[in-house]
Amino acid sequence: MVNTYKKILFTGGVLLLLTGCFFVRAKITGRVVMLMPNGETAALPDAKVELWTTGGEYLDTATVDMEGNYTFSRRVPMGTYIIKVKPGSFLGFKEKQETVRVLRSIVQRQIRVEPLGNQ
Image (tube, rainbow, N blue to C red; front, side, top):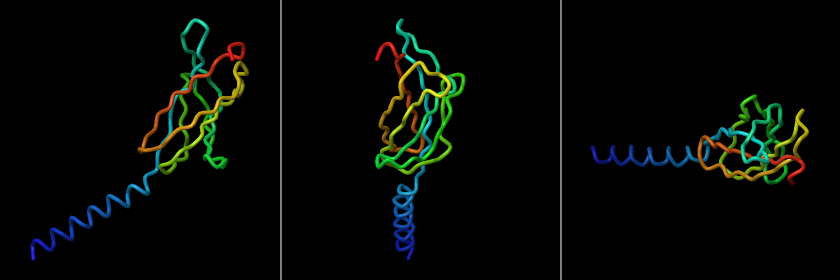
């Protein structure tokens, strides 16, 4: 009888873990920096960072803060997404696009852009 309860609890726990994997929502956060000619990096405050599905569906926009950090407010399921960095009020670089794979609950992604004259 005790073994039956243990089996039921074990099976239930395994099922709960497996179904939980399908419902995990990830927080995508990161930093946008400009690669300067001298090799150093500089933050790009007010740049816009957009999150898109690989199928072209818009999901969210974040604004880069004074330190270059961004965080999307929308949490997304595991999968592959596109992050687009747009100049915002800072016009010294072209839009940049990168693909990010979400495999865990928090994804941090640093994106480097180059000044217009270096591209």
